Amino acid sequence: MTAAVASLTVLETGPLTTVQDAGRFGQGALGIGRSGACDRAAYRLANRMVGNVDGAAVLEVTFGGLVLRADADVVLVTTGARSAGMPHNAPLTLAAGEQLVLRPPVTGARTYLAVRGGIDVPEVLGSRSTDLLAGLGPDVIAAGDRLPVGRSFGPMPGVDVAAVREPEAGEVVVQVQPGPRREWFTDDSWEMLLNQPYSVTAQSNRVGLRLDGVPLERVNTGELSSEGMVRGALQIPLSGTPVLFLADHPITGGYPVIGYVVDDDVDRCGQLRTGQTLRFTTRRLNH
Image 1: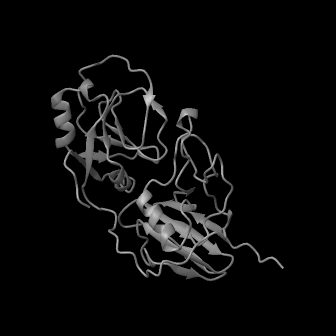
Image 2: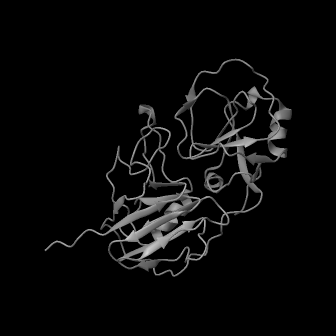
Image 3: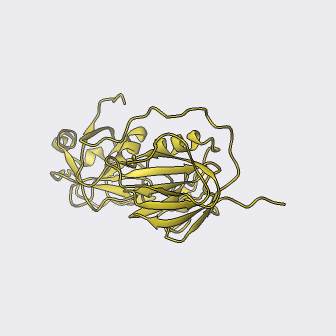
């Protein structure tokens, strides 16, 4: 007799819960972005903590509020933004019938929940990631959804708690490198980019962080043909204030890119909340 497939039933979703994995690779020429987890480091850690195979799908929970019920005994873990009142960065067993409640985190924006075996929803173009901009992948998680749990996993790592830092609560400093359209801006604008604090606005999402600060002045005010965009690009629209692209960024864009945030620091940016302060530096940072 074949054993029943384990599953999780969604009772509440919070502001936004999506399925995410490592993303869709190598399809940019077809107009298909990578998407995937906003905080890739937290995503990878979650899978490692429960012995999942590389690329297994997890839940990305924005600002908590997720309530799940286990339909069979499962092993799971949360990483990224810590939900108060439950183990974090530490595997736990949720018995059949038990509920898990993710409260809003004190710091950080996105919590990653990995279950041993992975979230086994169907792949779309080689990935289980929900791309909010392109409308690809699984639907945004809704109350009443039943999420099947996969059976592909390796040995547990034998680590009770992962010693990793919490997402930062105050001002965050990230490393930036000059972009392909740096010359479109005055030297004073480049210095201003590096020397002023930017505030994360409420218009930020998985596509990118919209930042508020003193507008940057362009030297070249002409039109720019659409160019390829990548995660971490700092695009300057007509407002003069940056947009920092995250996981669901567009494949092309028509505004100049003044710089790029280094890849590891983009993970940290994926945990920023509305009103937090972000600064840029060209210095190499030690985290």
